Length: 113
Image 1 (tube, rainbow, N blue to C red):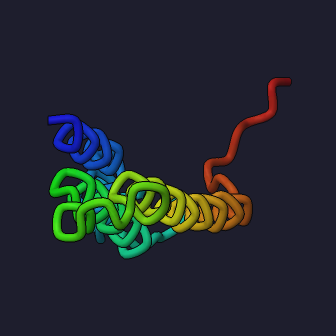
Image 2: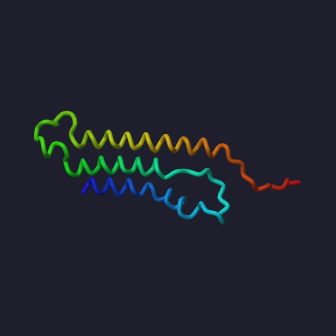
């Protein structure tokens, strides 16, 4: 049950990006946001979910009892997967942040005189 909660929590974090992809970008929409790719986010989510799945199934210690008691257990693998997924998504967040710095608002604000 704990692994299912981890997976649901990981999937819920992607909701804003799917909204942007489905509703904010398009030919008739005038949003001034840098284009982005869902691939890094999906990759990070897949790594995270893969680690949670290994943790839920207790792989590899289920098949090799007492061989992974100190290192290489599913819990250890899950934590490594979380860190790798975090790094992938963090680097994409930085790329998106720096890309947004190049945008200038096209709306002319009148002088307050």
